[in-house]
Amino acid sequence: AQSVAQPEDQVNVAEGNPLTVKCTYSVSGNPYLFWYVQYPNRGLQFLLKYITGDNLVKGSYGFEAEFNKSQTSFHLKKPSALVSDSALYFCAVRDYTGANNLFFGTGTRLTVIP
Amino acid sequence: EPEVTQTPSHQVTQMGQEVILRCVPISNHLYFYWYRQILGQKVEFLVSFYNNEISEKSEIFDDQFSVERPDGSNFTLKIRSTKLEDSAMYFCASGIAGGYNEQFFGPGTRLTVL
View 1 (cartoon, rainbow over the protein chains, first blue to last red):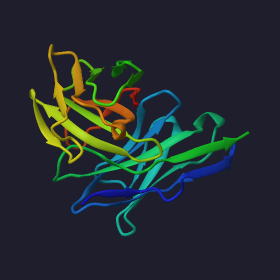
View 2: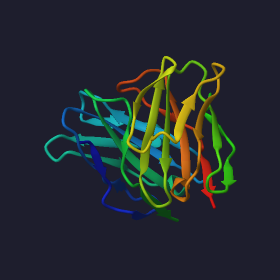
View 3: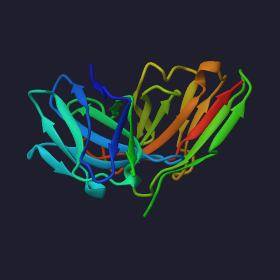
View 4: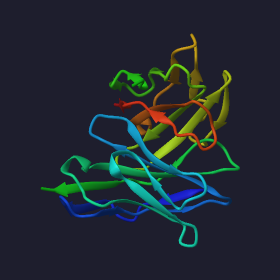
């Protein structure tokens, strides 16, 4: 069975400070991992994905994520947070051998404090 | 930039009534999905659709649910006899291909069943 855990419902960070949003996953095979962001009254927007290769992937708006196979984690990071980064962040996974549908975490609300 | 659109943004219905949620996927995409998110819970997969047929569905997608791509542009989700527990945000998504390709989400339709 595939699953995703986002252990923090809420993350607060000061503007200009680095941010981390945590995600761990469970799949039976090799994972495809995704991060999406949701702004109020908007759909989920794709940020970045890990398929294979380099464990550090870079995405939109200066975000990056590090795949760690031994810890089954895929934490989202940004070196310097902006107030405009405040949103709801979702981690998602699918097993590359399985169906195309994504399994999502419960989401983490990021608040960047000016 | 092309987007997935959904109508209506909010639908209120009485228990037992039929509802149809509409989506216009991105025009050159071939894979289509419906997900839902009950308030405060994770985003859950309902169904995927490819080549004019359902390719995968979850246990949530029972006989009360159906999907259709009636005219080559719209993608609809029908709930035949709504229940209180169907109240949720319903997201449509599309992708140019399956596998590791990202899915693009619409803004969602909030369904409220009274």
